[in-house]
Length: 171
Ligand SMILES: Cc1cc2nc3c(=O)[nH]c(=O)nc-3n(C[C@H](O)[C@H](O)[C@H](O)COP(=O)(O)O)c2cc1C
Image: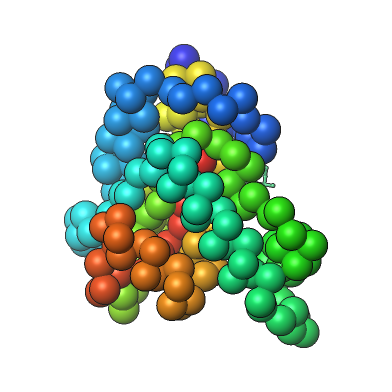
């Protein structure tokens, strides 16, 4: 697919067949993320790729539990409110059951942490489209970045203590 077409036809996909994409395709998407520009050529975006259904299911259960315990406050971002409301009803699956979830993290206190990760995430979404895979930016782990249970879960899979969770992407 030509680059402009890949950009113009990309859409957020929120229904998944559960079919696991080929590993080589997932690696190509992450490679596209790694080649994104970064402030001062810092290259500190860290990609943590989840493709194990059981681990993703545990993560979804944890996210649902932690959101369910959150209070909705005035002026709260509407998507965050929707997630909390859905979690309070139970059975909230934040990643729509997608088989692959790529979490991005970056150095705490680094001023371009979010900008660099956003460049990487956009590269990955366009690459996914070019490779005929659906994708969607998923921000729930970013919102729960300071949640102790979520951080402890993520430490088991490679998040470092000096990193902040900047975003995520499902495939
Ligand atoms: C910073 C950012 C955070 C987002 N977070 C979520 C999310 O947590 N869950 C979700 O389903 N979509 C999320 N999205 C996807 C947007 O809802 C989507 O891009 C927007 O509605 C436009 O639709 P399109 O991507 O199909 O053009 C996010 C997008 C961005 C850029």
